[in-house]
Amino acid sequence: MPDSKPQLTGPVDGAKQPDNRRQQAWPWGIGLVARQGELATEIAAALREMNAACELVVPPSVPPFELAAMVEKYRPKVLFVELAAVGIPAHEWITLVRAGADTPVIIAIHANEDPAEMIAAMRAGATEFLSLPVRPALFELLDRVATLLEARQVSTGEPGKLVGILSAKGGCGATTLACHLSCGLQLAGGGGRVLMADLDHQAPAAHRIFGMAEYQGVQEAFDSVRRLNSACWPEFVRPVGAGSMVDILGASLPGSAPVGGHTEPWRIESLFRFLRRHYSWILADLGRHLNPSNWAYFAHLDALLVVTAPDVLALYQTRSILQMLTNRGFEKSRVRLILNRNQDSPQDFWIESIEQMFDMSVLAVLPHDAPTLSRAAAEKFEFPATSGYGRSITKLAGRILHQGGPDSARKRAA
Image (cartoon, rainbow, N blue to C red):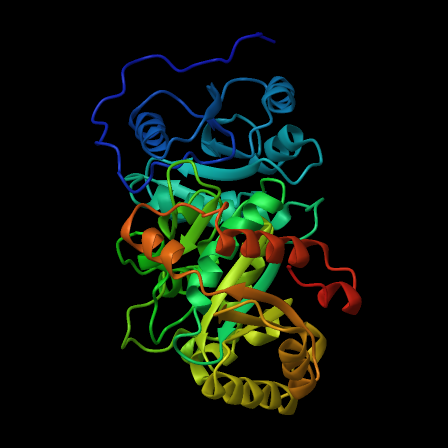
């Protein structure tokens, strides 16, 4: 068996310009078992377009036991195979090469869309069938295969946590808190990726706080849940800065149909399950008050932060939200109360009065730090770690990460 990766020879002709939408490298190795010719050349060119690593390229005349050894060495997750040219029955060839494993996924290739070859390949154990022309079918095919591969993966770590943030009314600063808390959680959580999902379909504003252009990602992600995988996910999110470990999933534009009210529940569940596999924390800005467009998300939340402010209307709305949540069966143990935009350091009796009013602890009291927030709005976004507001957010992130019970929830910043 050769030590170096066998390669097909000959120039690649007719290669298209790279698709700018496919800048993220396809994360799994690929092998190509084919004769030299137009079919192999077109597949190789298309794989280069999507930054896919071709771990091995060999002719179909290579004996199956030798190829099985190469597969064991290079561990490609996908094999494009010209099954009609392997010289033995296709099902025997696949069995020998896989050696009892469920990978690599076999994609049968043929120069033309021959129904007899397609049926024979599927009966032999191929997952997909590809013929000329390979574009755009190959891109769509690999999206499906990537979703299959991710579904097969056994996760060794705990799934990410999904936290909803709900404003008692407009003006409580919940979106500002959510954006800063996403950065605070990323810093306090040991470097894991964090997603800020703007699910406020009435007045989305997260992009403005991060100093980003408005874009839509939520509806497109729900529409594409069948093909979501690590390779295509960057099409839907944006990092909040160069090299940032915090991503933003942009909301639908105001006035569009509410996603939560019209998207099938299985799409919502599928998207959140995908997010939990790829992020340590997901913060979901749910907008203001309970409404048809955000209620569909509540069943999937690990915790809900209700953001209120020290004014009569906000506290009245907070009472209404808590009562409605209780009436609809949402567990009170998942609700946390945050008092935001506090003008001065509150006296203990003021906090205790609020806690008695709602029969629950106040998790955090955040100051009304207008100078810090106005500077953040006017300049490039940076987490204000040294300001009073930034220190309060950092403490809140620590509490969310390391909550130990009711007593720890009552400890507040000095």
